[in-house]
Length: 311
Image (cartoon, rainbow, N blue to C red; front, top):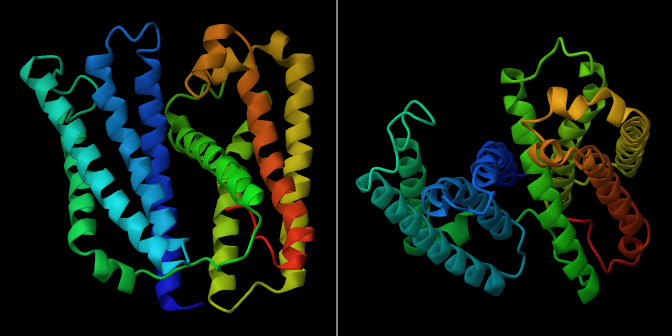
């Protein structure tokens, strides 16, 4: 694997972890105002600030996964302006709220709202740097994805599924990274939540493995077919067994154990509010759908060299 592509892969994984923490936090700020959005002017800059971090991740992803140089340059330019304008506008909203006295120092975090200002300034700075140094970035940043001739319908479908999967994986990785602070290990239903925590980790493991697979392939050092198939079988088997266990246990025991309300109210607030265990079923199905979709595509269309795995 080339050194540049390896570094690009590491940067993408680090950005994903940071974006996961930010996305999880931003979602909870959004949930805090979901009841009629009566405090939207106060809360909106808070969750937009954290969602901008996810935008940085996607901008970086499209930069390193676009083999077409012309499209790559256009994408970089658009995202540069998007990050600059987005970070600048949200920064203005944060400062206006400070002037109006809507933000009390330290009422959310130790340095709030300075943390929001720092993030917005950094996002805007990344956008400005991207615009100014566009040619340098295009020259230095490697492409870690091969270009395939693929059907239009597959491109659209894979993009939609990929966006949804990444957002869900981000949220649950952020949750699992922060969960030690609010898990009640002594709760009677704690044991029923363990498979859910495993699936939260699995969703990100699937992404990490897929990106590593793409990097190796684009660098001319593909993973041996035998090892690739073994990895796919292991991931598919684990996701299927654990996912089915979660769905079955949730359907038969969820209403009696109330494990969502006991342990997962901070991770699945919507489930907690409506007293339904929809989150566990979604979490069980997401890695299954992604893995099986990837597996089927690689076993059919990829053999004809007309498609690429879900990315």
